[in-house]
Image 1 (cartoon, rainbow, N blue to C red):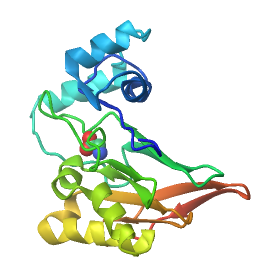
Image 2: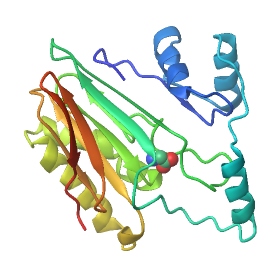
Image 3: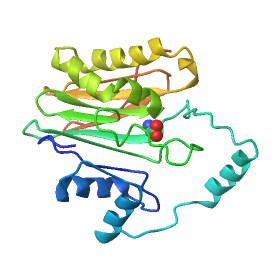
Length: 221
Ligand code: GLY
């Protein structure tokens, strides 16, 4: 999603190694925001992307082991996070953002997470700021976390406080919040940033002209 309020996403796209690049082309070359499944694959192939088997031996083995019980228990790794999210501001103060994920493991076929849903996994409003989310997508989609954080910042709340409020809403509505992770990162138009997570252990990286910094996010737990 860019500073001109343009957005592109792909969902349920299989066998393409860099789906975020396909999403960018959806934004730049089509009148649409989202392409899904076979249509997204066809669009990718027509635009020069190669189809390849992305299943590693290790992942295949883990899946074979999971199949023994086949439990659809959506627990996203608590000690780390699964999604890559990036918020960027240029020297003119324009903001853009992107995110990419393999999504939850061992899900029902066809399950789509929050990352490609504009307003859930990512939202940019160049007048206000931007937010990106990681963790259990169902929780993020149910509260439209990224849009919520941007709207809270529009009302004058700092990125850090807005992120905490978005996490607080998820915690309040889910008694089992100890069993999953959600984290959000935000930046506002002044370049202030913040993050908040349910579980400890979430970290985010800041890159400015003065260098790089890895910051441990505060968390509800
Ligand atoms: N946040 C990624 C997913 O839920 O699939």
